[in-house]
Image 1 (cartoon, rainbow, N blue to C red):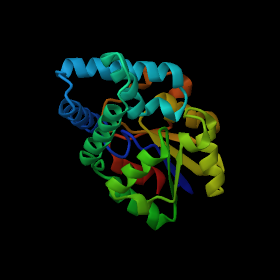
Image 2: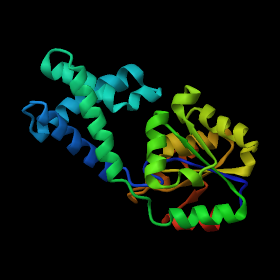
Image 3: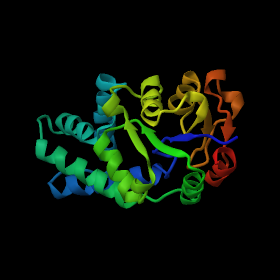
Image 4: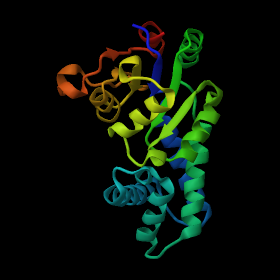
Length: 237
């Protein structure tokens, strides 16, 4: 079946997330050590987890819940017993610089984008997180000029699996749910969110660790499973 539009998730769908996150953490740890913090990796991981946990608890469901600068702001405050705005800024900036330097597209992404372009299919990225960071990722990956539309949870005010990011993209592209396919790695935010809107869904996990259908509820089950990203050409183009 061909579609008039494909709505891609970004993180761990178009590129592998885990190596980038690890590179970002290493860079942030180096930045904090340069500022005089005597941290081994275990202490850093505890600081990061503390800040992340507090941020998720208080801002869950919003784009701010993904902000590494907020993680470090809160984590450093707990670690040092007092605020360190400059340290949080340095660690957050270093994290994203290290993360972006590690990024590379999954095999097959460029070929799929070529096929969708040749077929005249609209291509959108519909993603949770803040707009500036996601724009930086698209530019770093070299696909910013291949995307017709970016919709972030920051700009629509709700995170997937809310319908709003999906319906906002469909409205901007002037497409009905029946004309579009959503592709992502997360069975809750991407697949269940798309299914609830009436979109067909495809599950692709960049690290290959996708749950089996037997582990999923009915609403989490995708219409398509992609063993390789290139398989999307047969599904969507």
